[in-house]
Image (cartoon, rainbow, N blue to C red; front, side, top):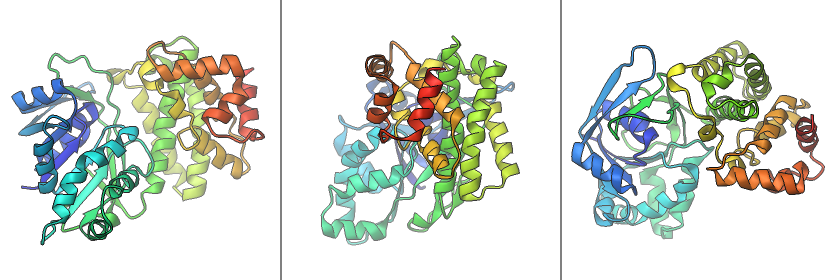
Length: 381
């Protein structure tokens, strides 16, 4: 049986990546730092995934185990040495920490005479997350070890998409997820005689799929949150149900679509259907997500290479003014959630220093950027 070690025993880990790996027969161990989750998985070794649709279909997942990243370092090292596949769903900022965590096990693995092939895949909402993990990991390896790793370890990037709303299940491990999911893997970077995972889409060039997802799902979700919060809504479902907000979100996605289809050559009609599917997902009453949760971490979301500023700058390069994206960025600058440190920092900075200085500081924009003018105009409208 193929062995998988998955970092991140949270909702995405259990309700998406872990589910698919178990359905494909992998012997699965979750690695995490949460004592509560680790203890519960060790005790029960099973959980249910509830599909958020009118059927309420339940998928039972059993035969899972768990290991604590810190408290069981020796066992974790052994699991890294033995794994056929290592995956993560920990958040982009934690990926380099995972590299440090697995480094000793990787070094031991590479010291063997017959090095067993391994694939490491970061399943994060970020472009090139596996590249980030690889770069961080190589910082812990010698030149010789790096050379062996280049041959024996695959580091394919991936794009993942499944909405997992806030949970209120009686069983801690059970997780509710939307019916839709997409997991795309960069096939050419895989190593060894890897069996194809059913439910995964393999492609030669991943970047178009990552950007299609990031600039449609993530951009649309965040735009719904910020524009909805501005009008006093508290859930994605209620916000997207407002005709004015839906029209504004569609206008944002019309702009990102111009970049996606224009630059990567996606079929315009097929992409329009994809956008409709995404909007339909936001309208699912069974996954009505809290706007504060979706809108949190606005500093990351308005950063230069994320879901708003990145496509906006690409559009400006194409001679297109992204006025609707600018409107969403303006709403992000107004967003304030008392439970989210980033939103408080951003909100206070804008009040004290203005929109222009905020975008120069947090979005790394040049002072004369046309995008700043567009956001200022939207903010002051």
